[in-house]
Length: 91
Image (cartoon, one colour):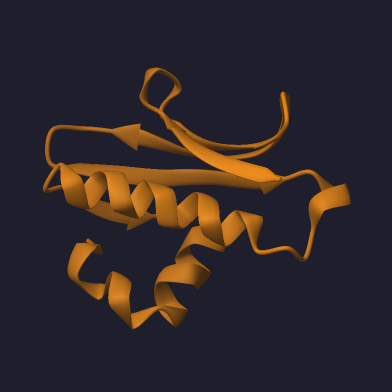
C-alpha cells in the first residue's frame, strides 16, 4: 500500500511503499506562499496517480496554513491547470 505523508522538516510530501521512498514533491516555503519546485516518482510506480497525490498533499497542507502556492514544477503546473479546485490557492 502506498502512503503519502507531509514531511515539513524536509519541505516535501513523500510517497512510501512500506519503508521504501518512491517519490516526492518538494516546495520552497516562505511566510505567505510555497513554491512547488520538483515532483518525481520512481518509474516502477508510474501511472498510479502518485504524483498527483503528492501535489494534493502539499495543497492540503498549504490550505491548512492559509498559504498560497506557486506551481513552478512542470507537473505541479499541469495539475493546477487541470484542477479548478486548486484555483483559490494558486498564486
